[in-house]
Each structure stands twice: as structure tokens, then as C-alpha cells.
Image (tube, rainbow, N blue to C red; front, side, top):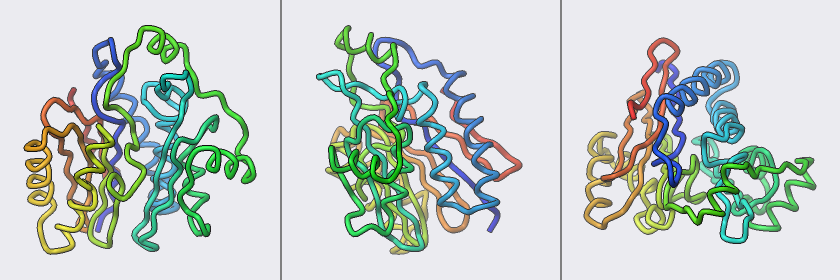
Amino acid sequence: MPAKLIIHGGAGSREGEPIDSPAYAEAVRTIVRASFSTLLRFGARAAAVEAVARLEDDDTFNAGTGSRLQRDGVARMSAALMDSDSLALAAVINIEDVRHPIEVADRLHGQYHPVLAGEHATRFARQAGFNYHDVVTPHRKRELAQHLRGPTGTVGDSPTVAGTYVSKNAGISCTGAGEEIVNQATAVRVVTRIDDGWTLARASAITVAQGESAGYRYGFIALDRYGQHTVAQTSGITTVYAVTDGEQLETFDG
């Protein structure tokens, strides 16, 4: 099967300002192209980590530097990683003051406790050699001061198998309203249906329809073992994505 890489940069737009479609599109195009070479050289897991790390470095996105601030002015970040070899999830939840939460999640693979939250996640990061990094940006400070908040937008929402899941047959990454993704177990639901013989298109369409009926707000990207991909979302959500096989490049049109 030819190599293919798909990424997303979240769902929706920044609160209080319209989505800058050209900027979002150019950012995900640049990142997917850069990370595709890593896919060819080092494999899927390395490419996924690099792509998310690049998203975390770009304050266009709600991840890493430029993450949304919570009510107390603190940026608490999450990231999850799962691969089809180990079929094991590793994740950090509400980690603080690290540049690349996805790299901390990657380091947690194989640990006795592969999912850590809050101060435990931050302490593990420091012990593992991840230095302090201030992720707070002026935009997010203004946003907090103006009391602008919203339910969507991260590049790695729901750092559980509900939002990030993979099997030998398919993988999915969700974004949007995290609690609603968890309630539906969206990622697991899609992949399990594919494991049971459904096509990627049918599994995605039925799952989104069920999300619509519940009034949920989310989007997702998915890729199956045959190289077929899909980008899906419930009403009112725009999933910012890019996908390439090294020759063709497809991205959202805003």
C-alpha cells in the first residue's frame, strides 16, 4: 500500500474572530509535507509525533504554544498517541509548561503507567528531561481578558481511546467538544465498525449521523489499511485537515 499521511489542526475557529482559512490551510499543508518525509524514513509513529509537535509549535492552533487558557489563566494541555503494533494508548492530560506534550506522551509508551494527568504528567516530563516552556501567547491572554471561550478547536481532543484509536485495520483522531466525543466513544465506535467489516465511509457516516442526532459537535480524520481516508464532522464544525501520499495533496477549503 502506498504511504499516506493525514493530519488535522482542530475544529472551528478562534473565539471572537473569524477563521483565517488561507492561514489554516497553508499551515496544515506545510506540516503534512514536512512530516511525510519522516513517514517514509522512520514510519507512522515518528511521523505522527513530528506532525503534532509541529502543530504544537504553531500558535495558529490550540495545542502547545498558543493553547487556550483556563479560567485561572493556566494552559493545561493534553496529547495522546496509539500505534497499531502495540495497540496501546499513551497520553498526558492537563500537563503544564512543556513545549511538546505529544513527545511526553510518546515517552510514556512502555511505562508502567502510560497515562498521566496534571502534576504527575508534568513531573514525569521534567524527570524525563523536558525543560520548562512557557506556552502562553498574547492572543490567549486577550482572549481570557475578554471572556471569550468555546467548545472546540484542539488538535488532539479527548486524550483517551474515545478520541484517538487505532487497530490493524484503521486509525482515527477526533477534535471538537471533548466531553461529547467521550460520551459517544467516537473513535472506538468508528474503528470497531471497520474491524467488523464495515467500510470506512459507512462506519464514518453512521457514526456522524448518531452524533448529529445527539446534538454533538465534533470532527475527525480517519485512515484505513487500504489507504482510504475520510474527513467527517457534525453540523457547524469545520475540520482543519491536510492529507498527502507524496504526490497528491488535499486540504480543507474553509
